[in-house]
Image (cartoon, rainbow, N blue to C red; front, top):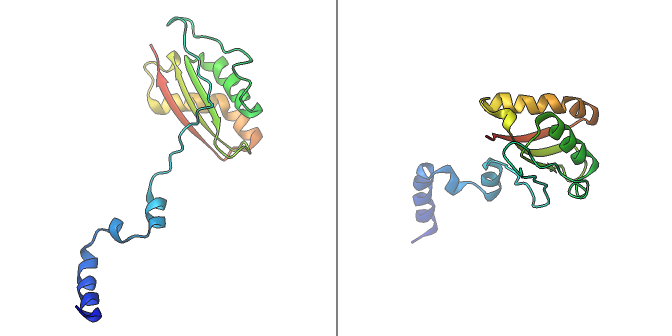
Length: 142
């Protein structure tokens, strides 16, 4: 088959080809949702009973950066969570954090209201330290 014939066939076929099949790999990667997984270096406390969440020890929190530790302390005091994960996902500069928190304080409250509760507790710290962003995942516990 001659080159002009192949080009003619391709020209007719490409307009009907889905964009994902013709896009460059960079375009496809750019279009994919960017969700950063939390790393394995996180702290999680589990309750000894449903009524009394376990309180972390200083040794258990020693792997956290000062900013992560401050976030952990603030949320622990304000929400008494049964599970709390805090991670600096900005590469260490402290401008973006991923937070996962489970608390009985969220029972009967919608997801947006739960995230507003977390934002309200962290607002002062966000303003002082000039955060660029925060990923918040909340869940209610019984």
